Length: 461
Image: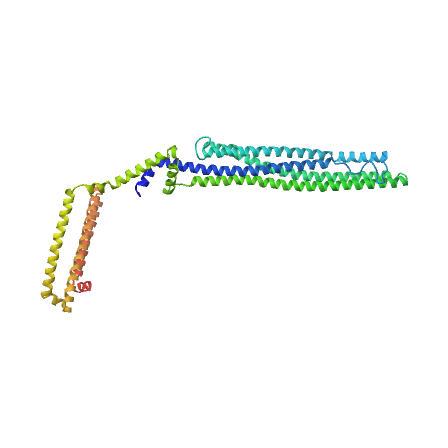
C-alpha cells in the first residue's frame, strides 16, 4: 500500500489537481462574497452619511434666509412709523448690498461642494465596479486565465490607480472647500455686523438733530432693533457653528468609511494571495481530494473508486508477483548454485572445526602451551609477532608510495614530451630525474632506520 497508493495518486494527478483547484476557487469565492457583503454594509453607511451631510448643508443655507425676529411693532406694541420702516428697509438693503459678494461666493462654494460630492459619489461607484472587474480578471472569470495577466494589469493601471488618485484628490478638495466656506461665512457675519453698526451710527447722528421726544422714541426703537439684530446674528452664528461642527465630524466619518472600504479590498487581496500561494501538493491533501472525487456518486465517483481499487490491486500484484512466482516455481540453476555454495560452506565449516579440535588437542598435549607459561619467552614471542606485523604494514605503505610516485613521474614525463618545450624539456627531465633519485634515497633511508635494532624495539613497544 505504501508503494501502490502514491503511484495511483500519480496516475490520478491531473484529476486530483483539478479537485484541489476547485476547492481553492471555492475558498476564494467565499472570501470574495464575504468581502462584498462587508463592502455593501460600509457603502450603506456611506450613503447615509452623505445624506446627513446634504441635509446639514441645506440647514446651513437656510440660516442665510432667516428674518429678523422683530415684527412690525415696537417694544410697546405701537405700530412702526413710516420712518422706522424706511430705516429698517435701508438697514436690510445695506446689509444685503455689503454681503452680496460674499453670499455669491458662498453660493458658488456650495455649488462646488455639491458638484464635488456628486463626482466623489460617482467615482466611488466606478471604483467599486472596476475593482470587481479587476478581481474577476485575476480569478479567470473574464479571460479564463488565473493570475494578474496583461488585461488585469491594464485595468489596474488604466482604471483603478487613476480613480484611486482622483478619489484622494476629491477628498482633499472637499475638505479645502469646507474650510474655505467656513472662513467665508465668518467674514460674512463680520461684514453684516459692521454694516449694521455703521448704519446704526449714521441713524443715531441723523436722529440727534430731531426733537427731544422723537430722539427718545427713536433711541428706544434703535435699541430694540440693535438688540434684535445682535440676537439674530448671535443666534445664526451659533447655529452655523453647530452645523459646521456636525459637517466636519460627518466628513471625518465619511473619510474613515472610505478608508475602511480600501482596507477591506487590501485584506481581500492578501487573503486571496495567501490561498493561491499554498502549494497543496502533500499526500494528505491529494488523498482528501481523491475522496471528494469518490463522493460525487453518479457523476463518476463510483467509476473513479473502482478504477482506484483496480489500479491499487494491480500495483500490489506487480510488487508481490516475484515472490508468488518464486513460491510456486521449481528450483532452477541458480538455486542449484546456491545449494552448492551452502554445501561447500558446510563442508569447509566441518573441516575447520575438525582441524581446530586437532589443533587444540595438539596444543594441550604439546610443549607450546608450556611456552606461554614462561613470561620472558611469551614476551619475546609477542614482540616478534608485533615486529613482523609492523614491518609488513610499513613495507606495504612504502610500496604504495612508490607506485603512486611512479604514476606521477610517468604522467609528468608524458606531459613534458607532449608539450615539446625544446631546451626547457631537457632541464625539466633532469630535474625530474633528480627528484626520482632523492625519493628512492629517502625510501632506502627510511627502511634502514626502521629495521635497525633500536627502532624495531621502539615500534614493537
